[in-house]
Length: 113
Length: 113
Image (cartoon, rainbow over all chains, first blue to last red):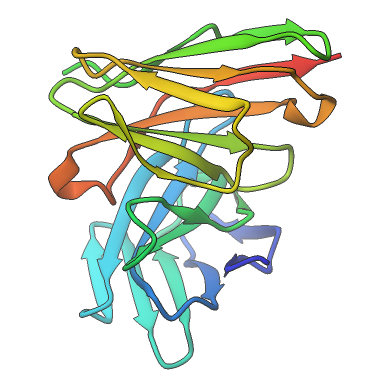
């Protein structure tokens, strides 16, 4: 039972353009969402998070949008840079789940010159 | 500020053996979580430790066990290794007051033959 889904295994974007990574969830108890970036041979690096009481959170080039009614969130990166090429994981946690994070399967982002 | 470190980097074991993986928390963090990441999948929560006690567990059998020490470092022990235990094992540390925001180490790659 995949409670957090990232349906696009890969995404290719040109440098300078916007990257949009999507994530859907099924568990209504999730109330906190995070995005992590992972380079090969490294652990996931925390990027940005959003609480369910908000619908948008911005940090520099990264913005996360949350649509609770659709159980959908997205990560926007603008402008995209070659160094952004990595695997991006969406993760969620919530009431009754303790502090465990439930991850999606990841989206491989490639930013091309 | 020292980040999360894990040892060893790589490990090869045979089926039926036992393995111990180690993790040092980021400075000041008092909570440690362990995740298993199989190839092509997102990390899956194994368990979390706070104040040297298990503070939540995922859907893993009892042969996966752990310890947390007074200095907040941690061990993951796996008994009776199976081929499906081959994966990247990630340790993440956090503050108990902000346990959703977990900071990951580089992982230990375990191969079971």
